[in-house]
Amino acid sequence: MTTNQTPLASPTASLKQYCRQEAETASLAKHLAAAIQVFIGHTPEAHLNISLEGDLGAGKTTFARYLIQSLGHEGKVKSPTYTLCEPYELYSNQHAFTVHHFDLYRMRDPLEWQEAGFAEYFDVPGFCLIEWPEKAEGTLPAFDIQISLQAGKEENERAISINALSEQGRKVLESIQATPKQIHEQ
Image (cartoon, rainbow, N blue to C red):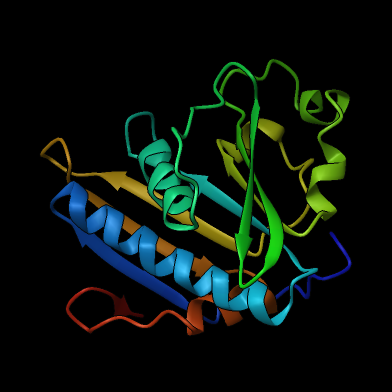
């Protein structure tokens, strides 16, 4: 666990949304990005660990793309399936921060992410966004936010749950401003 994390016994803040169209997924990611920017604006040296969980094809990379682009990245958001990690240098309120987007799907060994030298990324200002965290078999630092995606019947449908797993995660989720139609609090 990094020094900025205060673990919670169970999620104290959570959001659930059923997205029928990709635009609704993009909107939810945009709301989360705005909340992360507020958090970074108040605590520019902070670091968050965010897990992206769900079956193959549930929309993890799609959500990550919208989140990273909503934070100001103007280029293509590449899937880190083969590189394990893609870094994105961003700015919020004149504060530089980095998003390290991991995809651990192809990892052959739970410690491969550490052997590749990625452990240091879990302490730099910004956040690590990790797809397939279960592939690391419990070797990753504690998560602040857990995002679970479940594919719906139609191609762009998905159920998305966002849970705060630390005090920092709770602060992010509580600062999301949305209408009740868009996001339903648990």
